Every structure is written in structure tokens, then in C-alpha cells.
Image (cartoon, rainbow, N blue to C red; front, side, top):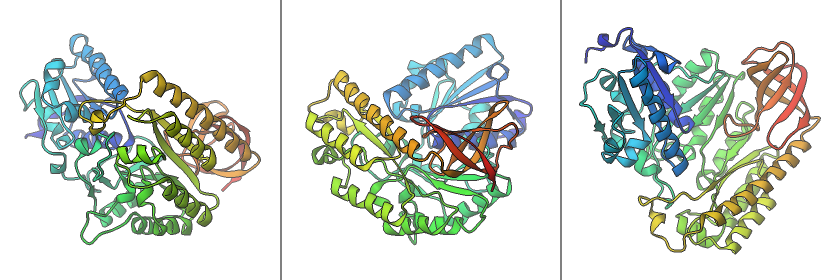
Amino acid sequence: MDCTQLTAMAVYIHTLGCARNLVDSETMAADVKKSGAEITSVPAEAEVIVINTCSFIESAINESVDAILGLAAYKRSGVCRRLIVTGCLPERFREEIAGALPEVDVFLGTGAYDQILQAINGEFEAGSCILPPPEARVLPTHDAGREPSTYPVAYLRIGDGCNRHCTYCIIPKLRGRLRSREMPDIVAEAKALIAKGYKEIVLIAQDTSAYGQDLKPKQSLAALLDRLAGISTDVRIRFLYGSPDHTDDALIATVSRYSEISPYFDLPVQHVSPGVLKRMGRGYTEKDLLQLIENIRSAIPAATLRTTILVGFPGETDADFERLLKFLEAVRFDHAGGFVYSDAEDLAAHRLPDHIPASVARERYDRLMTRQAEISLEKNRSRLGNICSALVEERIDDNLYVGRTAFQAPEVDGITYIESPDLRVGDFLNVRLKEAYAYDLKGEIECPI
């Protein structure tokens, strides 16, 4: 393809879903810029609109479709002449999606992100669905030219895909099997990001703690963190999207060894009832989880624990839910996200008996999240008076900034408001916490670090 044909063309990329999708969009944006086109933040000015979609659960599907229909209006009223949909939505629904969304010119699945320039340049027939196997896509390397759009935070993808077979999850179908990047390539990208001034590097993948299990010889997240921690003392390293059964003693020990690594463990337990865990396809028990949490807190007393919980799974009884709620109250996670089971015909769980009425599942969700909000508030109140290191991320008013501490992950947790007339985004500051809310905190500057 003659990429010079894209010179001066304006492209707008709209991203839905998780941080992993954001990295895919940033990589596509780098390809667009290298082709000579420009990225615009104004869809009305774009000749090409790209929508990078999510289809993990029903609400995400609906949000993706709404975004497509909304942005398609620019083909009628704006300068847009090509609408491209990428990512999980076309990967999940495949060719049938073309008939449902005739407004779209080209659909690219998760294995076809690297064909974005061909799609922009009009090299595919109208309504084409480009759906190579997700594993066919070579993961971008450190020299891809990606510029993170989340300063002073940068997400760094260390792998893609998942080898699990959880019955409620569509991700292995959408992303393929686990594929880890080589460690030297990840380290090179981290060094480049830090050299550009990014102050928090967040490692992500579909199953981050399974990193390296597919490589030859095998590697581990612990070994990767050991390499990354030595790059700079003026940076915070965090990893998200972990799993309980891959959080081992070596990983815990590595986190405890370095001040640069946030002692933050993302442990999506989903449930604790034996019957529910078995039907979900989760390979651990409540006893395993309690032992893991004890190991983490024994090794790192200041560790932050986050989890994700799924309610309303087929066959979940009142007793199952009460056991889950009791577990939540006993462990007292710092942060917890909840989901109601989202059914679909292409999920293995769809074929299970005893589906839960939506009203019952929602009531359980509300009870769970109400209790977690109370626990989170109690946790935040216990921090009042403490001095914490906070990364300044945004100015929202003349005397008010948004920052995050080591125990607050971007996007998924609360924030720390910082009162000050003049701060610099990207600085780490000592903040004395003085007000607590269910998820957020407020503090004042103690002294520069």
C-alpha cells in the first residue's frame, strides 16, 4: 500500500472498553501518524472515523452499538467518508454484524489491527469483515511508535490472550491463546516511556500474572518486575489484571523487595462457593484464596488488595451468595468491582441450568456493592492523618488537583483530591489525607518528595 495516499487525511479514533483496548487504539494511532495522516480529537473534522469496540458483556455491546450509530451520523452531516469498526465486537459477532450495521464500511477483528491503514485507504470492499485468527497478529514491539494518551500514566501491554476456559468469559474467543512479549522488548519500551517522562507504568495483559508461561524458556511476572524495578527510582510500577492462582510466593517476594513497585494486588476471585467456582471453571477454593491473602498481608502488611466479584451466575443459591458476602466482609478488600452475570448463547455457562432472574441478581449485586462501599469508606477513614505519596494527574479547578496514591489504580479505583494553588502534573508529592469518602480521599500538600 502507498501510505502517502493518507497524507493530510484526518482520522478520529473512538475507544471503548478497557485499558487493553486503549493500547490497541494508541498503536493504531501510531500507524496512522507514520502514514502521514493526522489524528484529530474532533469527529466532525474527520474524514475517517475508527471505533475500537468492546463486547465483553451485554452493556458493553450496547455501548459499542450506540457509539457506532451515533458516529455514523457524521457520514451524513460531516466530512466523514469512511467508518471503520475494530476490535471485540466484530470478533465476537463476525460476518453477521455487517448486515446489522450497514453504516460501517469495514470491520476489523482483534487479529486485524495491523490492517488499519488498508481499511482507512479503502482497500477493502464495503461491508468487509477482516477476521484473521487473533493469534495471527504479531504483538507490537517497543519501536512501534505508540504514544500513550494518559500522561503521566502509561499502560504497557506485556501480552495478549488467555489460556483459561472460564465458562462466563468470552475473552479467549476474542483474543486467542496467551501470547507473551519477550522480556527485553518490554524492558526497552519501559525505558523509553520513562525517558519521555511517564511516571507510572502499568503492566497489563488479559492475564498479567500468567506472563511468560508460553515463552521458551518460560518467564514469569516476578522476573519481569525484577528487571523493571531497576530502571528508575522516580517511577511507580503497577500491574493489573492478575489472577489468584498465578500470584505465587515469588511474585509476592518481588513486590515486597522494591519500593518502586506498588504493593497492589489485583485478585479477581469472582466467587467462593465451591459449586459456583466449579461451574465457573475456576481452579481454586475459598481456602486457597484465604491462604493467598494471608501470605500477601504477612509479607507486605501495607499491601492493597483489589478484587472482582460476579453475582447471579447460573445455579447461585441464596446460601452461595451469603457465603460470598461473608467472605467479602471477612477479607475486607480495599477495592472491589462487581458484575452481574451477562448471559449469551456463545458462552459455555449459557447451557447451565437454573439461571438466576435478573431482579434477584441485581438485588444481590446491590447488597454486595453497598457493603463494599461501607468497607471502602472505613478503610479510607483509617488512612486519615497519614502522609502518602501521590502522583499529580490533572488540574480540575484553580485550587484543586486530582492525584492517585499507590493504593489507587487508574480508572478502576478512587482518586485523591489535592488542594493547592499551583502544582505540576507528573510530580510525586507528599499529601496528608484529611477527608475520606466511600471511594475518594482529599488531602493537602505536606512537602515535596
